[in-house]
Length: 487
Image (cartoon, rainbow, N blue to C red; front, top):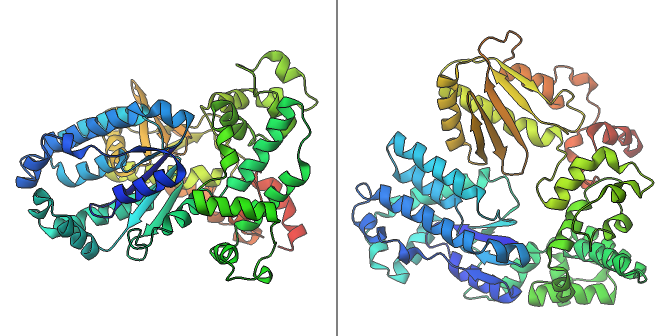
């Protein structure tokens, strides 16, 4: 697992990454910025030396992250940089369109070959505080830069973090002083491990079933209950553990054993017993639990398997064959679907709208693979556009540069395959001759139930479903429960 600590120059990335890695006994990966032979020249002449500086940093970061890919797959790595910063700085410093296109293509190749962050921790701070810290550490080449440049970098980081689609956590460094108060590392660790109790409960059950031993039912139930209750506690649980909050302040009072687990999280950043389960065979068990109907007993049988055979799919009362492809993809770690339309439609239409803007003219679109806004997307999403590839291809490349949570996966003739950082993807193909086409507005009204012109049919806002759904239920399934909830 890769945890990334990011932020503007002077935010404290290295300090926080070191403290967090030490607390969690994780592998530490620090940016080797001094190995960039062009960095000092860049600070002397940013415009004249931007090209070699940015390309060198991209390849340097790529090499560092690639070298830790195996470690990140087996255990936890905490890094104080990621490739996202390279595209951010390139946007600021590379002024030539051709260089920008070349840099973006190289960046996309590098992203495909490096581990994806399980969590992005963003250290935010006011520009004045950043400049104050930069001056205090007295790196001569940093002092030569106009402070206004750091303001631009800080604003770019804010926008990057706002758009970042993966799991993320903002830490306000104007308020969190890790140097003066090292106890904050424990609080940060507890935020990072918000799902520890649920994960531990599931793995305890699966491990016992795989070994043929008795499942510790009371213990796992207590962990599940505490895990879900903790979602609403905020900082109250910290005060309760410190003795400054009462039992009455909690909706559910954990047992003494669960309290000890929570104390361990605060003290060491993890539950010690979880280290036993840091391996691919248990990681895939965690992935497989997202399949509806695939319970802990069946998942436990995969712990010692090298692959899923036909017999494995047949030896179950439920119909696993209908989910065969998805189960295999989850087992191999190559997919996390199916996807709800609420996860796909807004960012997809935003991307198409951006491509249309760069095309400098309205386009007609046709989408296959998303037909019902109330059902999950379980197959390929294919998009046709009524424009020649020579023009739309350039617009898509520019859109990919702006919409950084998308990347080019492959290209073939007059089409391209694009992937979102959450894992879902779609293909766009030039189809100048097709007649049935819709505008972006038409697609929004068709595919987004909340944008429907039939507002009187909307009885409940199902965007709140994550509070009581595991995320796998279709909108129709949840809608059936709305009357029961009084909506």
